[in-house]
Amino acid sequence: MNVPALMATYQLRQREYLLRITRAMTSRLDLPSLLELILSSAAKMVAAPAGMIVLYETATAPILSTVDSGAAVESEHQARIRTIYGIPEQLLGAFAPLLRPIEPPLPAEEEDDTGDQSPGERYRLELERRVAEVEENLGRKLGQVLGLPLFFEEEVLGVIYLFRGGSAFTQLDWEFLEGFAYQAAIAVRNARLYAQLSTERSRLAAIIEKSADGILILRPDRKVEVINQTLAAMLGRSADAVIGQACSHVLELQNVTGDELCADDTLEVPPQGLRCEGELVRSPGNKLAVSVTYTPLFDERERLTNIIVNISDITRFREEEEMKSTFVSIISHELKTPVALIKGYAQTLARPDAAWDPDTARQSLQIIEEEADRLEALINNLLDVSRIQAGDLRLDLSDVNMNRLLERVAQDYRTQTTQHQIELDLPDDLPLVVGDEERLRQVFTNLVGNAIKYSPDGGLIRIGAWVDARIKEEGKPRLVIYVADAGIGIPEDELPHIFDRFYRVDSTLRRRTAGVGLGLFLIHAIVEAHKGEIWVRSAVDKGTTFSVALPIEDDREDIL
Ligand code: ADP
Image 1: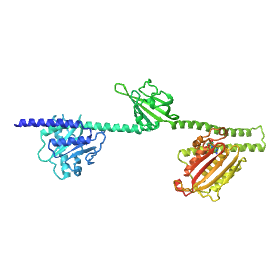
Image 2 (image 1 turned 135 degrees about the horizontal axis):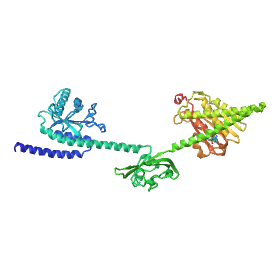
Image 3 (image 1 turned 180 degrees about the vertical axis):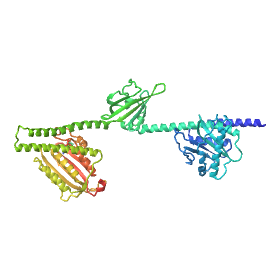
Image 4 (image 1 turned 90 degrees about the vertical axis):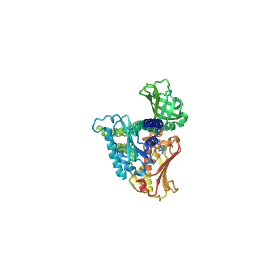
């Protein structure tokens, strides 16, 4: 065969090969394996025994895991050697000069030779300089080097480097590889986009799945396409059981304010969405206060594609709201009463037209003093509540003699009531408790005060204590102190709430007795700060026993 005929056959083979490789490349979306294919094919085409691909990371492209068992070398330009062929990994560091981007000529620019130095020429010279640096690092010659830029729409995605000892790369090699590089760049670009999309997809899936709010994605026919973990847990149903069901069967809402999209199939979804509040029925009798937002998604032809439903649990918000209004009404009532009394007695005493006998004057002043004390106690309680909420309840620790403390509390109250008998049932040698004496006094003063307040017909109030030497979970013995009364008792269903802020059992007596429902809340917080425990047993019309357990080993460090 003559030379032109040989050339023609050669070119035909190359074209066929290029076609085959292009097909193989376009079907690969996994970047590392695509790069391996590109590099090995390019090397094979020009019989190069070694090569590498350097990719530049673009701002939008996610930085993917490195290939070649982590042998990636990174430059400050975010260029990385992404795959190698025929080069030992330990030599990769020497190739760092090739990571600094070299501005390659645009494919069109190369022919546009204006006489001086063409961009192609400049590129080749710069490449030669870099190769010389690499050779110096390696301490040996590389032979022929071909740097094939991967262009995609004027953006350089990276460079394929091929190394071949001996014979120079010919113009033919160069032209053939250029066509290949063009296809390779498209494939790299696609693989990158695909990776980017996959990352975004999994990011979105994680956001939906792990969101603290419940999320439903509905199809245009309002059937469930996606439900996240949170909502499935809120509903107590498995995601599989819900998918494909009508939204109205899944999201059962009651007492709705606003438009409820799921319940009304005919309701149009406005582009700006809809919002409502209501109660989500989880099972009969088990409801959750929720806020629901429906957001429609439209395609480019403005057809509804999905509706995103976002469900947030607003129980806490509702409770806070209720708490605020309870707070305002209780406090204003509790503040008004003593203020009105103080004002009334003071005004009366101050009347210029009346002369008061000393007894009446003393009694009036005593009432003024008592009411001022009530106000002061209330203000102190409120300050304590805000300290507890700010996590700032400080304890002034010392060794507390509980015998003495409880005796004093009992004695103080004995002088205030004749209706009640206050009995102490204490061994003489109770162990010392490490605690804040004033705060502990507050605890027992409050408990005995409540025992008196909620035993309107009088009766026995017993204060007792014993050492609980059973080893609890922490392995520490405790001192248990109880305050028992024979009063009105607390209904069983109210017991779980009595330590809550502003909680008062609803009874006729409660309505008649003063109080704001802060005492037990404060006691609970003080006992907890001492690493103790408080519990209650009660029977309506029989009486109530509050027990407080305090650790008795030296827990100074634990408490601090
Ligand atoms: P307050 O006494 O100001 O209402 P507390 O926080 O001290 O607030 O008590 C909360 C509620 O618990 C009281 O309103 C009362 O209904 C109930 N309670 C507390 N102690 C007793 C007791 N010894 N006997 C019966 N009910 C009690």
